[in-house]
Image (cartoon, rainbow, N blue to C red; front, side, top):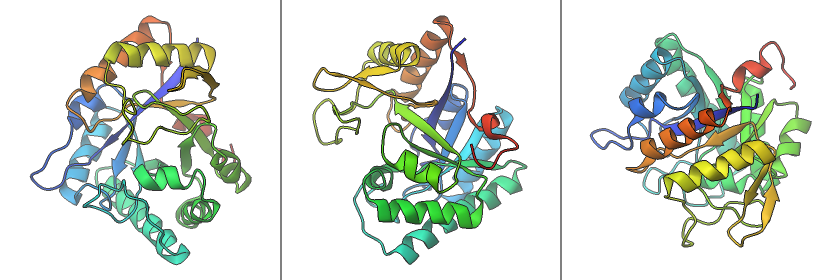
Length: 261
């Protein structure tokens, strides 16, 4: 039986401004990428999500990003190496502390937004993020874009790496994500999202925005939680995968007892 992890970006509200339905999404996914306060999230809200994730037995990871609340972490930046290393350590450390307070633990790191995309091609910033993880906790799993050169860079450094595919994002023919400013970059049709991901799990392939097929090797599927239809999309995807005989399970247990996966 095929098995896959479902992850989503959560904890991205700020004060009275809520974003997405985190509690409902936690009933769908198997892993939760939780904001750490730099691109989104505040301590009280993050604590709530961590508590609910523990209650629903969902694995949690640090969703680290650029220091960019106004731009939601989606604006490219060029911090120095000491700045980026410090910022990533700071964010992981903050989430670790909050998780400890509710009796939970951070199992992985997944960069957010512009940082996520930048490190797929900028080896210096990628090395900074890798260094930060190694310095604070080298047992943390590093979640990266499937097919990117970052996969080999991170594995060569000794980190455990999980590759992910995106359920509701369009791909370019080279395996990169289509820029959000381009029409069609975000897929809103629930059934299309589900069909694409069932095919991906069964065949290891996905159709790019230009109609060509690309091969992807990934152990996790991300469905975004920051839009009004997110929960419906995620539930449709989950139900369709289960109906197709796909098992849903978090990736973190794959690496238990191993530092180098």
